[in-house]
Length: 376
Ligand code: PLP
Image (cartoon, helix red, strand yellow):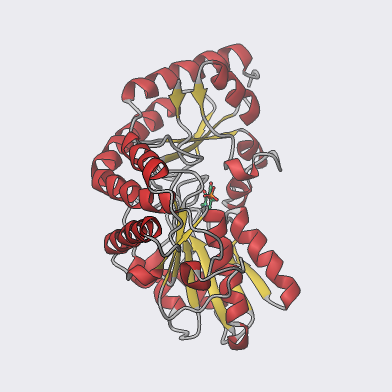
């Protein structure tokens, strides 16, 4: 099997699996229990939090363990807005966010929040100038993803942050799910950052929200004092403990894997552009882990299924919206035609992909277009 769908999810590293299963076997105590078993788990989990904080160069108290990035995004946006309503009710968000962001801001409308969507430009990014032009005195929150999950476009986080922070009562939330451990994330200039473990060879059901210490949130899950009272419920200590290892191993490999996927990406760009009626939709400057392409001769769905039959996994659009519209709204927002948007597939690479797999993919595409392609 050839797996080119790492932006949807990734395999779990054996080292992470080992830590997790050791925890399940030996350290099943409740991190809040006062006996030895509970205290041991608590200690291991707090050590993990400390290690993660060191890697992100933030404080341990700024790491909130959650169950998925969707939860982190919801807590960041709804939690922040509800706790800071007295400061203003205007929220800026990009128009190509993950549904966990867009649905969170839409949910806030019933509480009187005014949501303004920032359009990405033709390169797929939000410019600081645009943010500047839409900032108001009552803007309390700006939310943009770091790397776009369909195109790999990279938002200029540091520059946007400068604009956001000219307003001292405004916070900046960044969904770093597709960027973390692939490129450097400037955590020092972000107030709230979302990270997911299963996108970086960690466990499903494991994620975190980085929340700077001066940022107030309203909890979404009411319960005990876990996670500073921001997330009630017995903590998933085994997953939270495995997360430090997941992050450490991914960061250690960041440069090597970046180089590897860049070469695969470059090779595919060259070979795909030789196929008549092909389009490389991801811009040259995009994150090399994501390559969005279209062929005039074949729709997304037909190509995805034909590749699947050959044992090649790709995405037709981001997985979370794959059961909704049949075209990519990100491509349309970037100004691509509806045809390109309905014909697009997303390839997303990971540490184990090889050049040989890229060559097999090219041969498979040529064959499929020959067999099933529409005559142009
Ligand atoms: N944000 C982005 C940019 C994503 O790509 C995804 C998943 O594809 C999510 C959030 C949600 O991640 P999770 O599955 O951990 O909730």
